[in-house]
Amino acid sequence: MIVAKGAQPGARYTRQMRGICLLLLSLSCAYRPVESSAYAVARAAPSSAGNVRISATRDPPGAEELGIVEAHGSATLEAVISAFRQRVAGMGGDYGRLDVVATKNAVVQESRSYECGSNQTHDETRFVTRANPDGTVSTGTETVSVTTYVSQTCWETRDVEVVTLSVVGRAFRTAREGR
Amino acid sequence: MRTIAAVLLLAVFGCRHAPPPVEAEHVLTGVTSAPYTGAVRIVMNGSPPGADYDEVAVVSTRGTNGNATLAAVLGALQAEAARLGCDAVIQVRYEPGGQVSSATGVAVRTRPAR
Image (cartoon, rainbow over all chains, first blue to last red; front, side, top):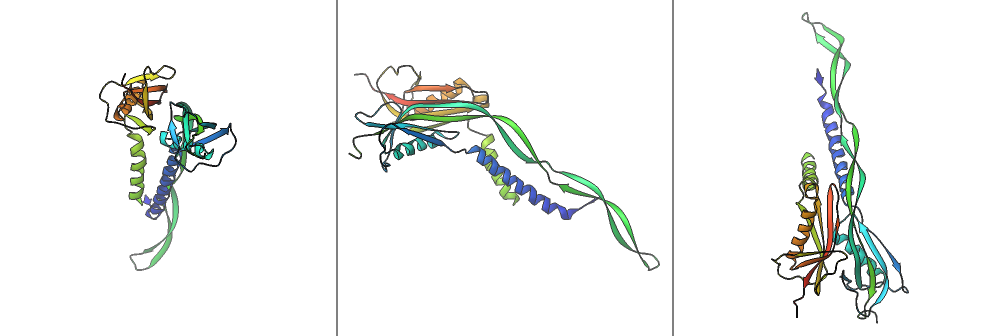
């Protein structure tokens, strides 16, 4: 049996590239974006460029309520609250009041690809030139078994429990800004 | 090429398969103080805090697989609050799950009684 060594580097390169693609796919699954939205309950105000203070327990005294804000995602608390802050600032607020901070589990199907190639053997006919003992040269054919690695991508799907973190609250403009 | 792939594999799957026992994080909304060494109260969402307090941070914990339990997740919530100098976590919500359980709350420092 002859192993076609010449085919190996190409197959290895293909496997490595697929491995990198798999890594990128895993990373994209791990870091899902945070989504947010807002609903204004007061007249539109220009965006606030200043710092947005956050509280999960107290409404700001004497402040104007601008709207309802929510942010959610399968992400860190920091990322979700950061999106909440941006929404508050986008409404012209400088104070975000968190009314609800909660997590929720959901089972989602996650697909993953992996390399599942295998060595495959087939017969090859080759022309062979032989030097005979009497000094003459004869040409013929011979059949040899050649094994090559045949790359293949397989997919598997499994159920994964994903945690979505969500915050819901209100945007306020306190007296210290824009008045 | 093989080395780069190995490093990337280790970075991604190594981290994912060996997570800390329970992940804990916080976002500061107030001022921290020296770590609190006493017992941290857990006050579930909807229950009154029971005393005046100063808000310090929003806290969140997440336990996976063997640590997806009420005890592990709430214990981590208490530990995270204690690290921030808090003696209570209020507005606590717990979300149970098979592979992952999580909790959120607000870490506070009770004001001394006058």
